[in-house]
Image (cartoon, rainbow, N blue to C red):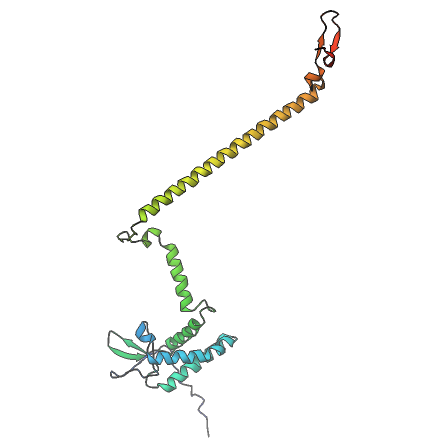
Amino acid sequence: MTLDTDWHAPEVNIDAKRELPHDFKPSSYSVICGRGKDCFEAEGNKRFRGIINKFLKDYIAAPGKSEKSRIVTKAMNIIRKASPEGAFVKFDAKTGTWHEVSLRYAREKVGAWFRDCLSHRYKSSSKAKHARKMAKRTSDVPIETLVDPNAVFNFPSNFAAHLQAHEHQRMAIAAACTQAQAQAQAQAQAQQIQAQVQAQAQQLQQSSPDLADPLQQQAFYDIDDLCLIPFDRLEP
Protein backbone atom coordinates (compact mmCIF):
# COMPACT_ATOMS: atom_id res chain seq x y z
CA MET A 1 0.00 0.00 0.00
CA THR A 2 1.44 3.29 -1.04
CA LEU A 3 0.64 6.66 0.42
CA ASP A 4 -0.13 9.61 -1.77
CA THR A 5 2.40 12.12 -0.52
CA ASP A 6 1.08 14.74 -2.91
CA TRP A 7 -2.29 14.94 -1.15
CA HIS A 8 -3.08 18.19 0.62
CA ALA A 9 -6.01 19.17 2.77
CA PRO A 10 -8.54 21.19 0.83
CA GLU A 11 -8.11 24.89 1.28
CA VAL A 12 -10.94 26.82 2.81
CA ASN A 13 -11.58 30.31 1.57
CA ILE A 14 -12.45 32.15 4.75
CA ASP A 15 -13.54 35.20 2.75
CA ALA A 16 -16.02 33.37 0.51
CA LYS A 17 -19.74 33.77 1.05
CA ARG A 18 -22.33 31.23 -0.07
CA GLU A 19 -25.43 32.19 -1.97
CA LEU A 20 -28.59 30.61 -0.58
CA PRO A 21 -31.66 29.46 -2.53
CA HIS A 22 -34.22 32.09 -3.48
CA ASP A 23 -36.82 30.46 -1.27
CA PHE A 24 -34.52 30.38 1.76
CA LYS A 25 -35.97 31.54 5.06
CA PRO A 26 -33.93 31.87 8.24
CA SER A 27 -34.61 29.12 10.74
CA SER A 28 -35.16 29.61 14.45
CA TYR A 29 -31.40 29.01 14.90
CA SER A 30 -30.12 31.17 12.04
CA VAL A 31 -28.12 34.18 13.17
CA ILE A 32 -29.04 37.20 11.05
CA CYS A 33 -26.10 39.56 10.57
CA GLY A 34 -27.03 43.19 10.25
CA ARG A 35 -28.25 46.22 12.11
CA GLY A 36 -31.60 47.27 13.36
CA LYS A 37 -34.36 46.04 15.59
CA ASP A 38 -35.43 43.19 13.28
CA CYS A 39 -31.98 41.59 13.42
CA PHE A 40 -31.60 42.10 17.14
CA GLU A 41 -34.99 40.59 17.97
CA ALA A 42 -34.73 37.66 15.54
CA GLU A 43 -35.28 34.34 17.31
CA GLY A 44 -31.95 32.91 16.17
CA ASN A 45 -30.08 35.98 17.41
CA LYS A 46 -31.75 35.69 20.82
CA ARG A 47 -30.75 32.03 21.01
CA PHE A 48 -27.19 32.87 20.04
CA ARG A 49 -26.92 35.56 22.72
CA GLY A 50 -27.95 32.90 25.22
CA ILE A 51 -25.18 30.63 23.90
CA ILE A 52 -22.64 33.44 24.24
CA ASN A 53 -23.72 34.05 27.84
CA LYS A 54 -22.98 30.40 28.63
CA PHE A 55 -19.42 30.78 27.30
CA LEU A 56 -18.70 34.16 28.92
CA LYS A 57 -16.97 32.76 32.01
CA ASP A 58 -14.71 30.58 29.85
CA TYR A 59 -14.02 33.53 27.55
CA ILE A 60 -13.01 35.73 30.50
CA ALA A 61 -10.82 33.01 31.99
CA ALA A 62 -9.07 32.29 28.66
CA PRO A 63 -5.45 33.45 29.04
CA GLY A 64 -4.72 34.30 25.41
CA LYS A 65 -6.12 34.95 21.95
CA SER A 66 -5.81 31.34 20.80
CA GLU A 67 -7.88 30.09 23.74
CA LYS A 68 -10.49 32.77 23.13
CA SER A 69 -10.54 31.82 19.45
CA ARG A 70 -11.37 28.21 20.37
CA ILE A 71 -14.30 29.38 22.46
CA VAL A 72 -15.57 31.45 19.52
CA THR A 73 -15.33 28.33 17.33
CA LYS A 74 -17.32 26.27 19.84
CA ALA A 75 -20.12 28.83 19.90
CA MET A 76 -20.19 29.00 16.09
CA ASN A 77 -20.26 25.21 15.71
CA ILE A 78 -23.40 24.98 17.86
CA ILE A 79 -25.24 27.24 15.41
CA ARG A 80 -23.83 25.43 12.38
CA LYS A 81 -25.06 22.08 13.64
CA ALA A 82 -28.46 23.46 14.62
CA SER A 83 -28.96 25.29 11.30
CA PRO A 84 -26.83 23.63 8.59
CA GLU A 85 -28.85 25.17 5.74
CA GLY A 86 -27.93 28.67 6.87
CA ALA A 87 -26.10 29.45 10.09
CA PHE A 88 -24.85 33.04 9.84
CA VAL A 89 -26.85 34.72 7.12
CA LYS A 90 -27.39 38.19 5.72
CA PHE A 91 -30.07 39.67 3.50
CA ASP A 92 -29.12 41.59 0.36
CA ALA A 93 -31.70 44.32 -0.15
CA LYS A 94 -30.52 44.99 -3.72
CA THR A 95 -31.07 41.44 -4.98
CA GLY A 96 -33.72 40.41 -2.46
CA THR A 97 -31.81 37.22 -1.65
CA TRP A 98 -30.05 35.69 1.33
CA HIS A 99 -26.46 34.53 1.55
CA GLU A 100 -24.32 32.92 4.20
CA VAL A 101 -21.57 35.29 5.26
CA SER A 102 -17.89 34.37 5.02
CA LEU A 103 -16.13 32.54 7.82
CA ARG A 104 -13.97 35.58 8.56
CA TYR A 105 -16.99 37.87 8.76
CA ALA A 106 -18.87 35.46 11.03
CA ARG A 107 -15.91 35.04 13.38
CA GLU A 108 -15.44 38.81 13.60
CA LYS A 109 -19.12 39.25 14.44
CA VAL A 110 -19.09 36.52 17.08
CA GLY A 111 -15.93 37.96 18.65
CA ALA A 112 -17.54 41.40 18.65
CA TRP A 113 -20.62 40.00 20.41
CA PHE A 114 -18.41 38.51 23.11
CA ARG A 115 -16.59 41.82 23.60
CA ASP A 116 -19.87 43.77 23.65
CA CYS A 117 -21.09 41.60 26.50
CA LEU A 118 -17.85 42.52 28.28
CA SER A 119 -17.67 46.13 27.08
CA HIS A 120 -16.50 47.28 30.52
CA ARG A 121 -13.43 45.08 30.06
CA TYR A 122 -12.56 45.60 26.39
CA LYS A 123 -11.80 48.93 24.71
CA SER A 124 -12.18 47.18 21.34
CA SER A 125 -15.88 46.44 21.87
CA SER A 126 -18.30 48.22 19.57
CA LYS A 127 -20.03 49.81 22.56
CA ALA A 128 -16.77 51.24 23.88
CA LYS A 129 -15.79 52.46 20.39
CA HIS A 130 -19.20 54.08 19.92
CA ALA A 131 -18.94 55.84 23.29
CA ARG A 132 -15.48 57.22 22.43
CA LYS A 133 -16.67 58.28 18.98
CA MET A 134 -19.68 60.14 20.37
CA ALA A 135 -17.55 61.83 23.04
CA LYS A 136 -15.05 63.00 20.41
CA ARG A 137 -17.81 64.14 18.07
CA THR A 138 -19.44 66.19 20.82
CA SER A 139 -16.14 67.81 21.81
CA ASP A 140 -15.32 68.70 18.20
CA VAL A 141 -18.69 70.27 17.37
CA PRO A 142 -19.00 74.03 18.03
CA ILE A 143 -21.54 74.88 20.66
CA GLU A 144 -23.65 76.93 18.26
CA THR A 145 -24.31 73.85 16.12
CA LEU A 146 -25.73 72.00 19.11
CA VAL A 147 -28.61 74.47 19.41
CA ASP A 148 -31.29 74.80 16.77
CA PRO A 149 -31.67 78.53 16.02
CA ASN A 150 -35.23 77.91 14.82
CA ALA A 151 -36.28 76.05 17.95
CA VAL A 152 -39.20 77.48 19.92
CA PHE A 153 -39.03 77.28 23.70
CA ASN A 154 -42.12 77.57 25.89
CA PHE A 155 -41.21 79.48 29.04
CA PRO A 156 -43.47 79.53 32.13
CA SER A 157 -45.77 82.51 32.59
CA ASN A 158 -43.87 83.80 35.64
CA PHE A 159 -40.48 83.41 33.99
CA ALA A 160 -39.99 87.21 33.59
CA ALA A 161 -40.75 87.85 37.27
CA HIS A 162 -38.31 85.15 38.35
CA LEU A 163 -35.68 86.56 36.01
CA GLN A 164 -36.17 90.10 37.36
CA ALA A 165 -36.01 88.90 40.98
CA HIS A 166 -32.85 86.99 40.21
CA GLU A 167 -31.31 90.12 38.65
CA HIS A 168 -32.22 92.24 41.71
CA GLN A 169 -30.72 89.64 44.00
CA ARG A 170 -27.56 89.56 41.92
CA MET A 171 -27.25 93.37 42.03
CA ALA A 172 -27.84 93.45 45.82
CA ILE A 173 -25.13 90.86 46.35
CA ALA A 174 -22.75 92.83 44.12
CA ALA A 175 -23.47 96.07 46.04
CA ALA A 176 -22.91 94.35 49.39
CA CYS A 177 -19.61 92.95 48.15
CA THR A 178 -18.52 96.41 46.95
CA GLN A 179 -19.44 98.00 50.30
CA ALA A 180 -17.62 95.32 52.26
CA GLN A 181 -14.57 95.78 50.07
CA ALA A 182 -14.62 99.58 50.64
CA GLN A 183 -14.92 99.12 54.41
CA ALA A 184 -12.03 96.70 54.41
CA GLN A 185 -9.88 99.14 52.45
CA ALA A 186 -10.77 102.02 54.83
CA GLN A 187 -9.94 99.89 57.86
CA ALA A 188 -6.65 98.88 56.32
CA GLN A 189 -5.76 102.52 55.61
CA ALA A 190 -6.64 103.54 59.21
CA GLN A 191 -4.46 100.78 60.60
CA GLN A 192 -1.64 101.86 58.31
CA ILE A 193 -1.90 105.52 59.46
CA GLN A 194 -1.99 104.46 63.11
CA ALA A 195 1.09 102.35 62.62
CA GLN A 196 2.91 105.26 60.98
CA VAL A 197 2.01 107.62 63.88
CA GLN A 198 3.23 105.11 66.45
CA ALA A 199 6.44 104.61 64.53
CA GLN A 200 7.06 108.38 64.36
CA ALA A 201 6.38 108.75 68.11
CA GLN A 202 8.83 105.99 68.95
CA GLN A 203 11.43 107.53 66.67
CA LEU A 204 10.96 110.95 68.30
CA GLN A 205 11.27 109.50 71.79
CA GLN A 206 14.48 107.70 70.92
CA SER A 207 16.06 110.80 69.36
CA SER A 208 14.96 113.34 72.10
CA PRO A 209 14.32 111.64 75.44
CA ASP A 210 13.86 115.05 77.20
CA LEU A 211 10.79 115.71 75.09
CA ALA A 212 9.14 112.41 75.88
CA ASP A 213 6.69 114.01 78.36
CA PRO A 214 6.58 117.82 77.87
CA LEU A 215 4.20 118.48 80.80
CA GLN A 216 6.41 116.80 83.40
CA GLN A 217 9.52 118.60 82.16
CA GLN A 218 7.85 122.02 81.88
CA ALA A 219 8.99 124.78 84.43
CA PHE A 220 8.10 128.42 85.11
CA TYR A 221 10.17 131.45 86.32
CA ASP A 222 9.14 133.57 89.34
CA ILE A 223 8.70 137.23 88.43
CA ASP A 224 10.54 138.57 91.52
CA ASP A 225 13.73 136.53 91.71
CA LEU A 226 13.62 134.88 88.36
CA CYS A 227 14.51 131.59 90.00
CA LEU A 228 13.43 128.38 88.50
CA ILE A 229 10.32 126.99 90.18
CA PRO A 230 9.28 123.43 89.53
CA PHE A 231 5.83 123.03 88.04
CA ASP A 232 4.44 120.97 90.92
CA ARG A 233 5.31 123.70 93.54
CA LEU A 234 3.31 126.50 92.01
CA GLU A 235 0.95 128.11 94.49
CA PRO A 236 -2.63 128.50 93.53
